[in-house]
Length: 559
Image 1: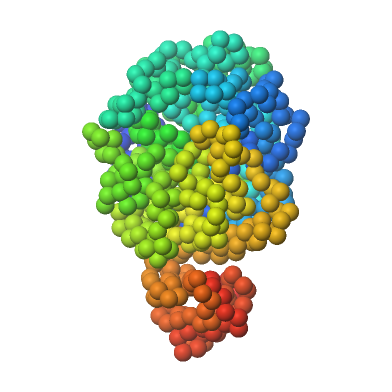
Image 2: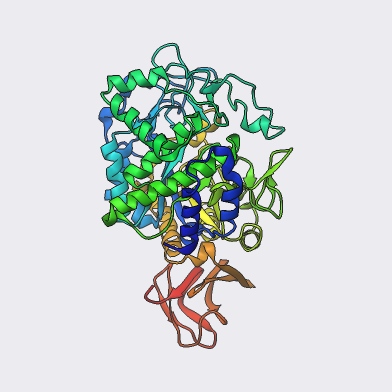
């Protein structure tokens, strides 16, 4: 175990009997010593909406009696864990160069459609009903275990989406309300202060968990009845008793949710959490969650030595909406802080290894040299050593880059070769349109995966472009985590280096036949141009290509 990870684990373990509010200072001290693994700073994370990716088992499409009667793109459509397994078995993620798969939550969701903002089911996974069980529409716990196993066999990490801020909407029947000591009834968020963001209801209809509460609570009666009906009441209660006895935590809502979420790590070997609505929860909760996740991950590794990929620690990154590089919106320029209005918070001091960069889709409208230099400055400056997760589209950012997918080749280059880690949103690599007639709001971002694109020459060509870029990135941590040096503008040539890892990239609108690699690769060095597969030798500080091209990805031959 790396030394800094060992120190963090010891610091967290020493605090197991301390209430949530005592975590901030200690975790902040530990965080100063921690640099996020280069693997994660360069990761290529494939983010898929479980219900919209692949339907591997049509028999579960109408689980719990749900019907296809929601508004446009707001019903369950059949995607499931079995579908993800099929794509893993087919090598889809491996061939694409993916290093981590992030799924939307697969926990059991509310069963009925919600109609306040249009008729919508919980297909997206963010309206929890029971954090301890896989929703029948997504599959089974056995299938989830198989998915993780298959991913690990291919060297791919698994990220699960964690929702602690809220449960799903309540209904009179089928999806009962959580007790008032678990959830708040107001006030609505006003977005003007920490309290107006973190201790309020982000959506009045959702049941906002009292994550800041110090008052012990009992398991809600509706959950007890459900577990009793499913024949696992005694098991669930015994596990809760054992957890609270081990940790000494009070039985507050936050600690129940920490236990339930980290069980997925302890039981199945999940490698990372993506935290939903992070700024709406007291950040000290996230520090406690990370501490327990680290311990759960270490326990899983000890119990499953044959399934361990390496000695990396548990990774946690989050969605702090409106946080981004270069002082984007509520990010404080020149720092890692998020500005609540009345206070600043550095989420990296509370267990986070990375944050989603909500500024990238805007910044990516810059010319490539300007974009890459901007991010080189950020990742070598205020965001040095931490994870910055870039994306061009997502499930809830309604200002994606190029929603009509008019520049797919350039979009891929910008995301795959920019400093930082990369989040591919399902369908980016197949040019899935983000403009769907009849879909309102974020639904337009959530159409079913356009697998039929693979039947066209254009679709296969775009996918191959993404594959070449992502596999190059996968082989070289320097691309996302290394130092950036600009060598020329016409063609645009830059290098990235991290330790012994070195690459040179050339890009231009017009084809070029040679590149200067002086200062990066010595004369006589044999190089491979990874986009085409051509091998060349360095002569006089440069390389000459047999066929001119507009993109060149140079690496040592044999890598």
